[in-house]
Amino acid sequence: MSVVHQLSPGWLLDHLSFVNNINYQLHQHHEPCCSKNEPTSSVHFDSLQMDSLTSFGTSATFNAFDSATQPDNDDRGNCEISIQKYVFRSELFNVTKPYIISAVHNECQQRNEKEYPVDGVKEENCLSVIGKKRKRCVVFNQGELDAMEYHTKIRGLILDGSSELIQEGFKSGFLHPLSEKWDKCSEPVTLPLDTCNLSELCAMAKHLPSLNETELQALQLMEEDISVTEQDLFSRVVENNSSFTKMITLMGQKYLVPPKSSFLLSDISCMHPLLNCRKTYDVIVIDPPWQNKSVKRSNRYSYLSPLQIKQIPIPKLAAPNCLVITWVTNRQKHLRFVKEELYPSWSVDIVAEWHWVKITNSGEFVFPLDSPHKKPYEGLILGRVQEKTVPLRNAGIKVLPIPDHKLIVSVPCTLHSHKPPLAEVLKDYVKPDGECLELFARNLQPGWTSWGNEVLKFQHLDYFVALESKS
Image (cartoon, helix red, strand yellow):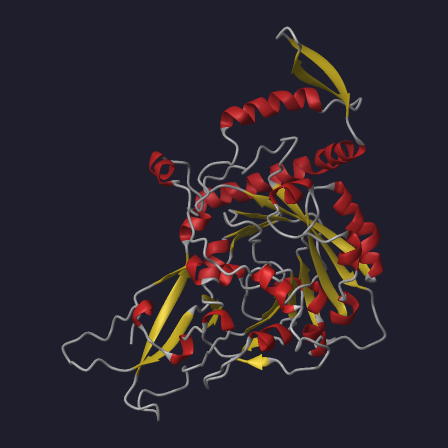
């Protein structure tokens, strides 16, 4: 369970627990050791030589099979089954201190007293040619004024609601005061750099001759060995309908595919395999790559223009009364775009606005609440597809109305754009058997279809730790 506490302001979530409660168990067949004296109960992943994990290098093929239903004495011969369990690396949620230290926090607070006046003018310190400080007045631009007005409106909600959830987290022991031991353990996390660049791979895949509008059935990761070329991977939805995790190898890199999950690895120009499935969804979560100055400077990922985001075929993907949720940065331009242009173009009515509040393991905001630059919260805009004449799926099942201004408080993953899971906080507002879709996803989860040009990014084996396997 990811929900640690649910109170009237919202939810305190444990993102790491949600990931590790996914059944990341890999069933593997291997030949028994020749010598009876050699142990077989503990098998390490790197030592297993299996057809299902064979890498074909630059040919970008992968094999997978499900051995969950195979008995030990099946027609594979006298082979044995080992169960390898994986957990997500806990240090990736080791956020012990705010991202801005207290000295900077105090400076920000003092500056904000000058920078948040009611007349829309701020005072800036600068150095004159003779080295003395002088003050000059700078008029806020409209974007800054809008951001200040929005922050003033929701500040009390964020502060009071978060405090209530954080105090409950301390009482239950989920959150802990910062200790000297914790402080010394907060070393920066390093990850291997030789991972596959999925977005660049998707860009290259657009030039493959086999990628056309031909309708192909979804690729099932069945119990038989499957060898799939990169053309097949980019031109169809991949499904793992089994109860166990599968591992695929792509360009020499290994990725874990959780049970009951499906995905399409492609960019926005190659969404037709998702549409060809002719499936509609009751929940669609969207995390668009918003354009901003930081993204342009860092070149960390490609971004989409508002026009490109509007072209996402939500009306074709959404079931009647579909719940559409869009992650939005604190830039007011983006908020207005979603509310005034994007949702109306998709025939989606806004029903609520929620806020994700990011805290440390010791219950502090990751950024000062009143920082003029980075805020410790992000927004989610929730809407419903306008009623259609088509009968609702399972119309007899009642769902609760969605409340406004709920908080989702959690310790964020240190990996960029690894958003907290929404499955459990949404369960009261969607049908129990609802079809769920995440767009621009970077990870997979059971019961969901995920799409994006980095959809396998956080499924990379390097983000997981293999526990001792058992036969």
